[in-house]
Image (cartoon, rainbow, N blue to C red; front, side, top):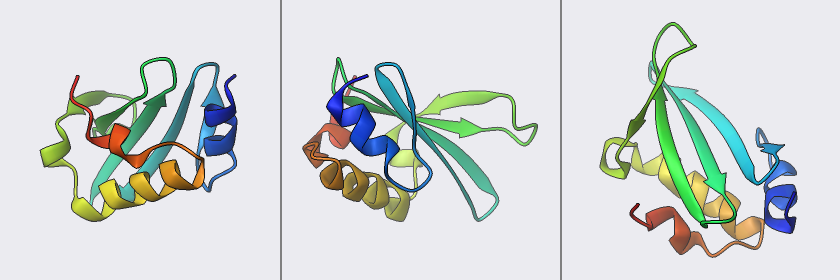
Length: 89
């Protein structure tokens, strides 16, 4: 694991998985899985369907602003440039 992944795993709700860190959020009837990949320094958003098992990738524009801001705050607290959250793949 990298230092960035370890640092994110110390944040509330985040967990480390090799070269990536993941967190799950649920609110207003929607559930999301957010992943940070250290090798490519990018953030991916997935919307989790009601079955809790199926997730589909979603664009940043489809993710609520407060959730995106929370992710940027967590990145910053982990010593990661928050601008990676805006990086397009």
